[in-house]
Length: 378
Ligand code: SAH
Ligand code: SF4
Image (cartoon, rainbow, N blue to C red; front, side, top):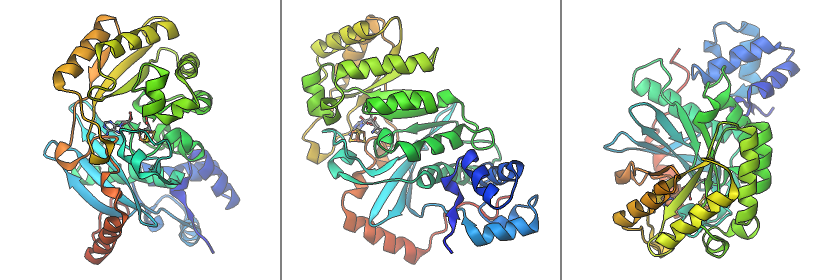
């Protein structure tokens, strides 16, 4: 008999699945809390479930984490995990601690089909969509690993950003249940504004997200006009800037009092000139009323195949000054975890050479490193 990975379900999914076993909603809720709030993967430890149910679960279900290939800790506290998703593919998640929050950057796909020029995931091409369970497993593992590591029962991860590998809105049906588990009070209990989906601009799916699960939205803009954006973000040919801007406005109708964050990767001599800042200011003014967006300038994280360079620090600051002066709140993203190459958007670097990954998988198995949480932390 095939077993079901319970990480694949949001609460409603688990209620439906438990219903087939003849179990009521509150049993599913208890089970969901054991999994996500306590990080327990061994059914026999779920002490308030009837023994008969625990036995049924053990026979029919698993709580299967992703195997950890590597774990790197940066001097600044950033932690990067490389997870094996089979077939020589691996995805990464990064934990970024700050004084007032802990952010986990999560992957949605192995590779990416959008093919942005400045993105190493894009250069790698598309391998496959992650399942809901594989998306959720990144948070499940990181949260419970960190609680153990920091010796606390308190929640460690307060924010999730879908800014790892992949285009989340091209894996919509797997994404939404994972988001719901993040938001669920019986799951991770994160507020809608502390979960961010970052997209290169998949317009129809932005509309669906606004209906299904209106979390915070970040849009990877990177260019102020269509010719340049066509070149940098090829998806722009399908959903050009005017359509993208309208989709942002529609999104805000369903997420009132929110704003859109535009991400803008600073590429030396390509999109970082004062003229580009002026065009952006015009685009923002034409597209919406008042302060409806913010900008986050990202220093480009170079990799050899891109043929691109990061803008000099002074150019980035001047660009930010022009936007701020025009009344657009603009921040420059701090680079974190530099020593372990953990910047979001740079997460595929290690995966490009698949033979290397496979070798690591073998080494990992030989070493039999036990990093997965669950089982004993009740
Ligand atoms: N596919 C989604 C989310 C993953 S990429 C998206 O594109 O929004 C997350 C962010 O990292 C995006 O804003 C992306 O443009 C940025 N990024 C990609 N490659 C980068 C690089 N080499 N240096 C800096 N930022 C990069
Ligand atoms: Fe895909 Fe985002 Fe990278 Fe573009 S920037 S290739 S959409 S992961």
